Image: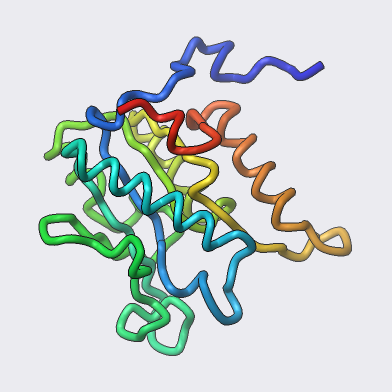
Amino acid sequence: MSSPTLRSLLQLPSEPAPLSKSALILIDCQQTYREGIMQLEGVEPALAECATLLARARAAGTPVIHIQHDAGPGSPYDVTAPIGQIADTVAPQAGEKVITKKLPSSFEGTDLDAELKRLGVTDLVLAGFMTHVCVNSTARAAFNHGYRPTVVAAGTATRSIPDPTGGDVPAAALHTASLAALSDIFAIVVPDQTKVPS
């Protein structure tokens, strides 16, 4: 039998806020993860989920913020090269803010917190890449800043990584464990965008 979550023990919300009362943050939905050395398992279905979520947000008048990671020239995160561009399926439209970051958390060294305060929103819907790094770091930072993040599981993906005690951690296991860790206290985690009310 599973232990109760810290969220339940602390009586934190268990249901996501409506999309129309939230801000949508799409994290690092870059070509980086669609091809080459950083290609993720399940990246295309996850991007399709992000695109559906984005269309819903636009229809609802929800503020949309795109996060783009920049690790400089020659890296898979070079925002001046095709590999570092935001995927065409979720490309920003005029008026949608794009924030460039250099660290895993979208809050660290950026104006994301100031932008959310300007918008007057405290509920956030998060999707993007990778589940165990930038999505994880951003959701935790959002919680620590007093926001109420919801993570859309089907709109995230990751890759297999080395297990420091030997072997590898499969992508599916890492994805699941990362989401479970978030849902214990830091965020509401929903299986897909249909679980986020309009």
